[in-house]
Length: 407
Image 1 (cartoon, helix red, strand yellow):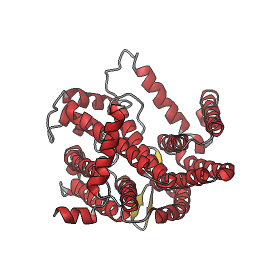
Image 2 (cartoon, rainbow, N blue to C red):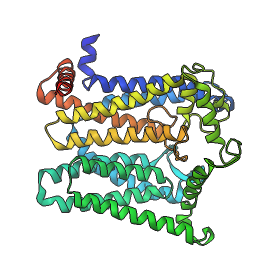
Image 3 (tube, rainbow, N blue to C red):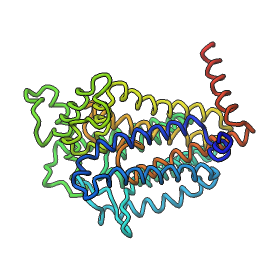
C-alpha cells in the first residue's frame, strides 16, 4: 500500500496532508453549516452530498494536475487568460446576480465564477513574466509593462463586482514581484499609482451623489457604506442590537463567543440557523462555535503550514518560474483564508471571500484544487530533477531548518 502511494502520489506529502485535512474539516462543517439548505431541499442530504462530490472531483483534479509538467501549465495559462477575459466581459452583461453583485456566469447549464479563472491564469502568467525578467534583465521593462497591462485588465474587470478579490489578486502579484526582487523603482511606482486611484475613488464617493454616478461604478457606494458601518459600529450605542444591516456580523460574533475553548462539538451549532452565509462567508465562525478555539487555531495552522511549506519548496527549485509560482499560489490561498477569517471575527468589513477548500462553492473548490495540483506537481518535478525520493525530500528540508535554527 505504501509503495502504491509513493508511486502515484508523487508530490510533497505535507501538501497532500494539508489538502486532505482541509477536505475533511470541510465535510464535517458543511454537514452542520448547510442546515438551512438541507431544510429547503427535498432530499436533506443533497447539499452535503453535492459538496462531497465537488471535493471528490477536486481531489481527482489535484491528482491529475500534479502529473502535468510545469511547461504545459505555463503555456496553458495564456489560453486560460483569453477565456477568463472573455467570460469576465460576458458576466458584466449576462451574469447571474446574487447579493447585488453579478459574479456568476451560466453556460450550458454550468454555473461558475469567471474571476476564479482570471486569478489562476494571472498568477501563472505573472510567474512566467517574472521568470523572464530574472533570466534577462534587458527585457525587464518590456515584460513588466505587459504584466501590468494584463493585471489592470483582469483586476479591472473583477473590481466592479468584487472589490476584495481584485485588491487581493493585485496585492499577490505585487508581492510576487517583491519576492523576486524586481527593481524597487517599479514596485514603488505601482504603489504610488494605486494610492492615487484609491484617493480618487474616495473623493468620488464624498463629492459625487450616488444618483449621478454611472451605473458601472455604483457599487463603490456599497464598499464605502460597509467601511463606514464597520468603523462607526465600534462606538455606536446600539452596537449589540441585531438588525438587517448587521445580521451576519452579529450572529458571527455570537457563534465565536459560544465556541469557547473546545466548542459545542460538530453538529451542535445554533448560529448556523441564523447566519445567512453560514456555509460560505461565515463558515469559520461555525468552525469556532463547534470546534472552539482549538479548532479555529487548527485551521489557521493548516494554512500557515501550507505557506511555510511552499516557501521551503521554492528554495529547492533550481529555476525561477516554479519557485515564484508556488509562492504566488500559496499566498493567494492563505491571504484569502485570512481575509475570510478576519470577516468572521469582525476584524474587517464583510467582503464575500470563501474559505479555500472549506466553504461551499463549486468553482472555488475546483480551482483551489488546481492550485494544490500545480504546487504538488512542482514538488514532484523538483524531486525528479534532483533524483530524491519522498523521504529524502522531506528530510533535507527538515535538516536545513535545523541548521538554520542552530545558526
